[in-house]
Length: 181
Image: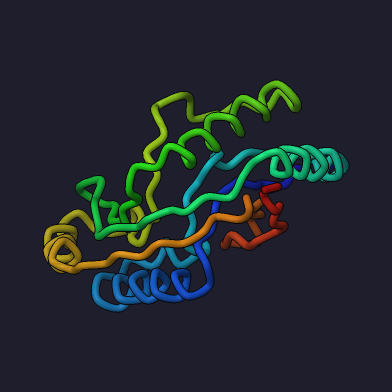
């Protein structure tokens, strides 16, 4: 039986995705950091996990059930931040609805599917990565100097949770699950 690799996230609207992708492209062109381009702009709710292909319908059904019971909400992105010395990201303003969604999802997946967050409970720190760990340490200060001086502020409505699947060196949207109300 084939195991597939997935993660669960929320994605901003198409306009913000295009803008954030341009930040990723800038980092790729100027600093050689292209790893973040392997996935659409997103905020991870549940990190990568393996799932049996023959149980895919069960996973989809559970995520659909979960999403239908949750409500939409607005999310604000504001400027940039970093996990020095390698990661740069669009910062997400503190949002109780997002925190609650992530916590509920993690609890729900564990109780319904015995699916545990393999990375443990290090606290949820929502962010939208634009430079991943392939940003060389020696280039980080210059890249961070550039992005720390940029202003970026957007608000979007979160209306879905999204299941992303790993496909030959990149993450693709597999299915979106509309939030119920």
